[in-house]
Length: 555
Image (cartoon, rainbow, N blue to C red; front, side, top):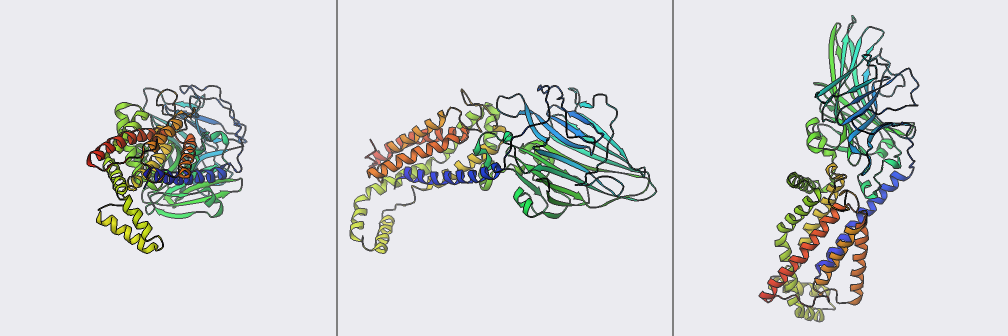
């Protein structure tokens, strides 16, 4: 059995499956793709200053107020009091760009908004109503609220009074170095009757995704846009845009739960924190080719001459596991590592631990590769011992083949009897592959989903370990190391010239596939191959001392 051949075949099949899944996702996203022509004119890009913009979509007597912290810049429309624009000041749009990542935006070509409000017969508001309440502010001259260096928290209140004299205050509370936005609704019922209020929140996004928001790396599209929600019974459940278009979701949950819209590295999520109140989660396909995922609380009674406060949290930002876990239960699960999450998560924790001391994600990947290969060394050694034993049995195997070539049942029975008598495990050469391939895939999902590796520099020309090598040097080096492994491997199963040509062709195809893989993953594979070459020579030398020689290497 030739382990290198089997490894290439299995790897090629898995990589082909990944490419096929990515291609399908790419077709779905790009089917009706349009270019994004933003109506917002940015006059400055320094994160320490406020962005002045002109919005041509406003048709009411409203104004835009700006709230800025050290990590967030929000633009809130006083007509409804909703967030229409959100910039992540510590994350750039693209590599080496000074322009901050534009997460929420409102334009003719693309809409991504976070809305919230109160449902009441005397309030011109509702999840999908055109009529919205017009809030007033505290007469801030520039309509700008900036968190100063010596401040930890900023409060921005918006006011509205309905015709019955009920006063509503919608307050945005933002903290330093925090992507969570706390939205408080203070209701002062000055009327003579009990008022019944419901709190709602929406996340709305256009179905068509602008090309400008893609990362110019089609491999990243495997983690396509989705909505997701969490309830007491379902910790994390995705619901695709296509599902929303075809069949709306409607779930009633008990208290704890959240809704979200996901991207590869970023997320927007509403988490209502209303004690002793059930919540309805539902989706809706809007006629203007948008989808929304929504929550609505059950009715809350506020007696006459009483005050009541409703609170909810909006996370607008990157998928940072430890911080999101503190915001809402199971929110960190939106960092989707796929079906191998139980491998990806520990690998990331280990990678993060190593990075804490060396401060370079590339070198952390190299160290974690050394650790993995050291742990799996006994399996690798068992693999080559199994190959060596099978080589020694080659004359007997040939004899059995000639004796039972016309009787497959007796042939396989004789082969298994021989393996048993000689204490040889025919699957021993496959075990390391069974271990390595899940690790390989888990690393792929981890490197493609972890915000910490987005735009993470390594050395020399590698400035982003989460994207492909811009010069394609690493994939070529990887191809060379695979070629060396094949040349140094025993030729038990590839003595046929045609098989050798097929193996060479597969090496080329495999290298071509890796041209578009995250450079961090290619780096892992290069180091793993170098270790394989070293381990091969050590094990061969030990086996030769024991008389279990593996000769006839490819020259």
